[in-house]
Image (cartoon, rainbow, N blue to C red; front, side, top):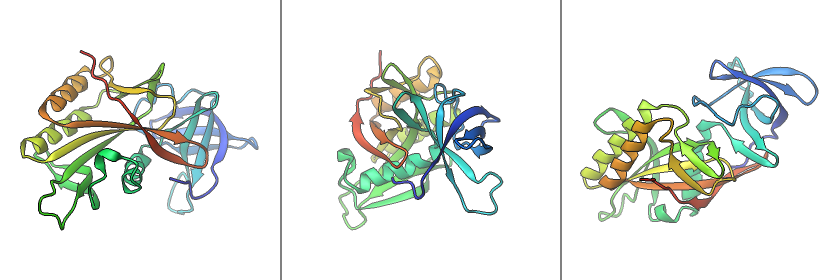
Length: 239
């Protein structure tokens, strides 16, 4: 995914009220940017770090700038905009970079499904192939990393556990279900559930895998010009 316009560089002053961040641009101007991330953003919101912002021309927006990237350590960028995770996964599938999901001809977004009134992030199918089984893909954005190990979630998430229950229902109905961890940074060698943050999610993920839900994780190459999922990562479930 190539950014439509050059990003603005600055230094992060603070993140607050979950959705706001104050940034000092290179010219010295201080602006407030929208933060499209509801998580704790541990390790991805340290004041003084270099950040990059996009700008919207929509006159109705109160805050035209959106925080997109942060330099988490020297030379390593992370994408913090969770609104990009679904498009990133969709792009990777459409471009044939996700071998496990290469056999589907159609992708739909935000389709209603399940017993708990959910919307699936991506529904894959081949409508002209009567033998094809639909695949339900739930995407999770991952930015929390410790010594090369990515963890999800970075805060207790009742909603994330709900999505796993919905995927288990899909499998029990004889269809395919995938939990897809979209890792928007390049310094990761594997993904694990964050048992130390949300043990219930970890337990539910293990239950889902035992039920037949598939776990996929892909890491991104991140620059100030582009983010692209390119590397399959193993998902570990320590016992």
